[in-house]
Length: 166
Image (cartoon, rainbow, N blue to C red; front, side, top):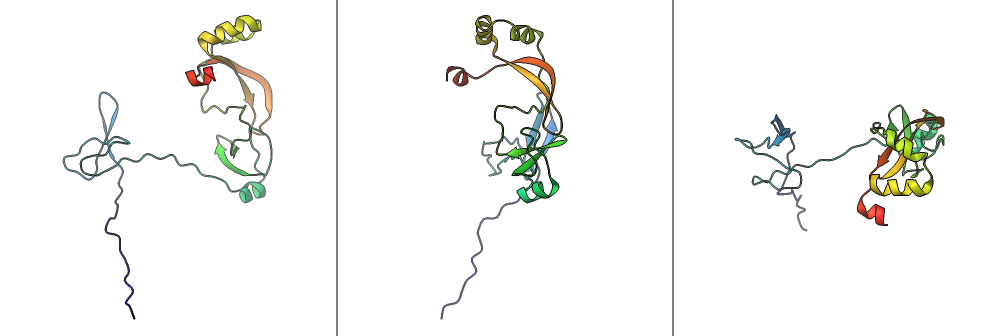
């Protein structure tokens, strides 16, 4: 009969918030484990073995919760279906239910030139778009996901070279 051994890992981890210090250039994140401290940069290993890991966390409402609470997606207007995430005062489906509609977290800088260019004939508009970027209209959407018909403003969306070429 053999004796069962309970294997314990030889490596453990400890986590602490990095120390934050204001500098002339901005905020410097420093190692909380070392004295004296040293700067930490995401993706760059430090001499003491400390890594700075940055993650984005978002709460997902289950399909069951969405169905029971009858949440409405502000993008597509569908009620009580799929998983959703909170978006300001409303909710959005995941995965994206309407890729054509962009939800902005903050309004862009509106451009009078973009508004003017949007009203020009297509042939002239194409020339302007090549230099400035695509003309986008910002439409108002209420909390039920319905467009109110109000155009809040216009702006030029600059696209990367890969998006422009392909």
